[in-house]
Image 1 (cartoon, rainbow, N blue to C red):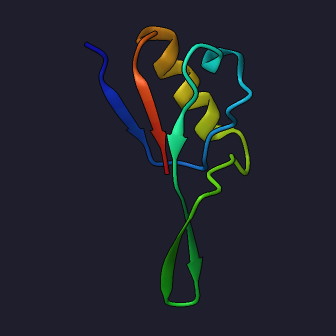
Image 2 (cartoon, rainbow, N blue to C red):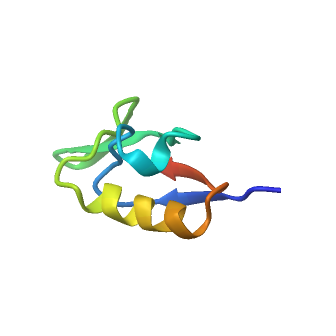
Length: 68
């Protein structure tokens, strides 16, 4: 049984080679003044979230990734 791991970071690039077998799911969280808003777009804005999620997937091949 695979686990689902949440990655709260800068997003995830679903085109990364570690995600070819099972694509990450997720939501975007954007700040607008004093409020936060959820979005469907969870693409990585600087690469750090992708690096962390790829490292998790490298050790846990069947783990699901849920990016925020």
